[in-house]
Amino acid sequence: MRRSFKNLLERQIKKAEAEGQLSNLEGAGSPLPQRHALEDPATAAGQRIMAQAGVLLREFSLKYQLDKSRKVYQSCTDETERKQLMAKLADLQMRYEMEREAYRKFLG
Image (cartoon, helix red, strand yellow):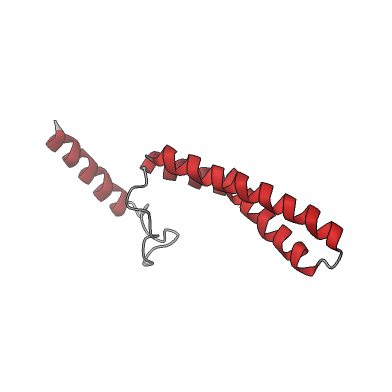
């Protein structure tokens, strides 16, 4: 069964090549993107679909907020405001690390 499926795939590829369906594809000739060795193909496909739709993982959204808050904190001179910003930074950092840990556990 496997061999016949492989032969079917090869025939379909050759047919598509003969019809020119595989010529001038986007990214042709460039190296494949680097992927994490333990990355699940289904997870990778889901992330790719989300990225194409403009959806960010919470981890990335929190990282963006964290970076932005750090810049605000560095430019702040008022001591009271700095304390409030430090509390916000601590909260964002904790939430970011929780998201990263949850994602690592999800990947296995």
